[in-house]
Image (cartoon, rainbow over all chains, first blue to last red; front, top):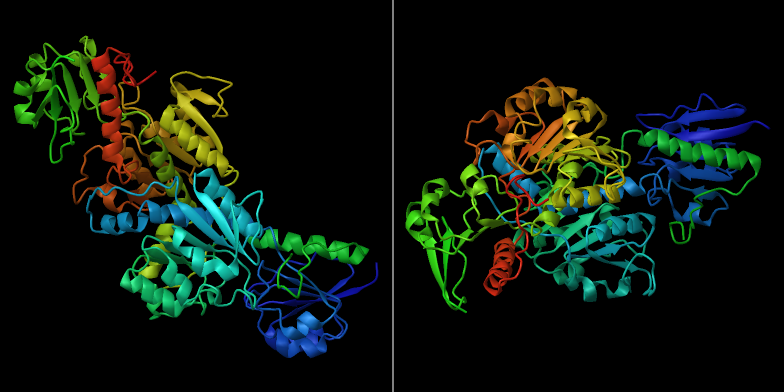
Amino acid sequence: MSELTLAVLVADQRPDLSGLADVEVRFAEAEQLPAALDGADAFLVWDFSARGIPQAWPRAAELRWMHVNSAGVDRVLTRQIAESNVVMTNARGVLDETIAEYVLGLVLAFAKDLPGTLSRQTEQVWQHRPTERLRGSKALVIGPGAIGRKIAKYLFALGLEVDAVGRTTRDGDPVFRTIHAQARLAEVAGDYDYLIVAAPLTPETRGLVNARVIAALPPNARLINVARGPIVDETALIEALRSGAISGAALDVCNEEPLPAGHPLWNCPNTIISPHMAGDFHGWRAALLDVFLTNLERFRMGQPLLNVVDKKSGYIS
Amino acid sequence: MSELTLAVLVADQRPDLSGLADVEVRFAEAEQLPAALDGADAFLVWDFSARGIPQAWPRAAELRWMHVNSAGVDRVLTRQIAESNVVMTNARGVLDETIAEYVLGLVLAFAKDLPGTLSRQTEQVWQHRPTERLRGSKALVIGPGAIGRKIAKYLFALGLEVDAVGRTTRDGDPVFRTIHAQARLAEVAGDYDYLIVAAPLTPETRGLVNARVIAALPPNARLINVARGPIVDETALIEALRSGAISGAALDVCNEEPLPAGHPLWNCPNTIISPHMAGDFHGWRAALLDVFLTNLERFRMGQPLLNVVDKKSGYIS
């Protein structure tokens, strides 16, 4: 095989690519990225924050393939890249199951009031409270993709009724009872106990969970976001949590990450803030690297790549 | 139907039995129980603490049936009662599913380090950590009864391997991969990530999770007890948690309930203490009452009672 030039965007941590034969590997932080992309055939976006790509893009004239090391490509997919001929692939599949486990853990934490139990424990207070039974509760999953389907499968196993919101209304789905068109979200939101955001961030989903949708949720509702912060209107959410208009929220993602100290979300009532780690299991980096290496092998053999992103929609259709 | 006399042991709270025709209902706290049992045909043990029964029992000469308002009958079943001709029934079935939900919530809380996330949240610290994936983990359920089977079903849906410990070794179980004889517990305990106690408290299970069993658990193991405190050696458990010999414990039940302020369990490392509420969902009291009322109707019609406890073993065989 002929020599191949691979640019790798890294930050604090870099993947072990020492085993690659006949590949010139150029590790680069944001500042070195323009030089690294110059003449590169392939580009691995290993650093999730994806800093520096728009600035370096004009130098990527030889680039044929880029692999984004996460399920969401929103931080990478500029209009320039969307309109280019570069094929984009992502890490779909690696984190689906662990994200679904995480969501199930959050749903159960709310239903069984685990935060209330832990805070009473620090006071050494034994206070019996009845909790919620999950069977028969209703969940609405925004994003009927691979992750949303895994979430639905687990919730269904616990006896919940699970619907979804997608681009268009669809019947006869093998997993979801009903898929509502997202234009109807505010109209249907009132029927659900759990609203779970698992959609890619695209122009269509940005701000989708807006003040009107949040106002439509019933008072017992909990919002769970394991996708991307900008899908949810945080100002409206904070207001709803503070006024008790909804019963809780769990955010693994925020508009600003890391969420800065002093931000009002940190101590909103009935709110669980976790640091964008829902899917990241021990060994996740190795598993993510495997996806890239499999595609690298296919790229070099001229075989069709896996996980090709539809750059128009912003996800794998 | 002829008039029937029903004694009801209550404490802080009493069931609504106002709709019963042709029944003389005698509500009694522990102190009034001897008089209430005098000449009673039936006895509802509504108060879970079951205080005062041994003292009052000599007056229960006419008693034919007693119903215990919980799944475990350990607080009621004295030798005198076991040897009497009084038929005992219990509340089996009402709380199975919600207890299983609760256990699943605890398993996920450990795997995803939800307590660590909540404590960092109070400090407003955003600190990413990889978490554990559940698929492929191994759980051992002590007590392959109705509750243990529900727990196994949910864990299995999440991809765990689930075995049980029962009185004797059994193969070909429809739910559990293997059922080990409890005599082998210390021998097999080292193979499991989660040890879940869901057995009735009987002479055979008292102290079953002893120092030897706890020492056999692997360092990553978590112990979950939703059954009865005295099944677990608390002293050995506290020692194992403090030394890091195991990775965590969640106790919904303790030797002494309520767990007194100042007890060392309250602030053991990686320990979740909840106030004996695992199965108690909103509406649980009404659901428990329904079980009794169904049996009361059968008792009066001379039909076989549901949920008859084998007073020799201490549970429904």
